[in-house]
Image 1 (cartoon, one colour):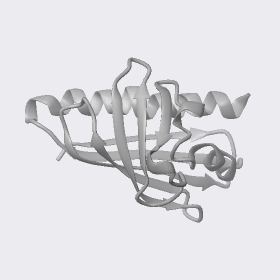
Image 2 (cartoon, helix red, strand yellow):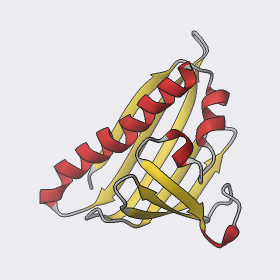
Image 3 (cartoon, one colour):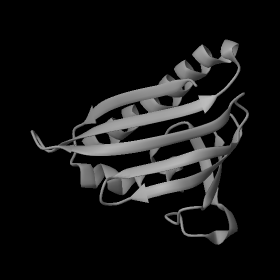
Image 4 (cartoon, helix red, strand yellow):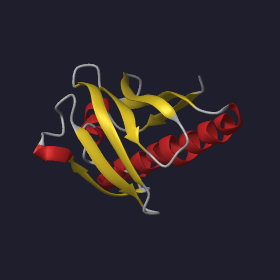
Length: 145
């Protein structure tokens, strides 16, 4: 089972970063690769079980289900229901941890999934750099400005 792990330090307090990323429907407000997003059936974006339906800037459509959300532990876990990527059983977690030295945030984004062996390296690299690291880089810029 391939695993993606990306971590970063954001120069902003964890509650401020969490305020930006906790909205399961808010990806277009902070992630540069996301064009639009909506929560299906008008459900609240913080209800475990809700489904977000969004488009990447290139037009690809992805549907994801919220599996867990904690305002206390600053994490969000979700699964992919539909995607153009050749993978299955995808589960990811975005987690923030306060760094008390300097009031910064340690951010981790992980994912595990199944796929054909020949696709694993490209998927791990693409998700890690184009999705997770791109999101952290955007958050760093937004929190700095």
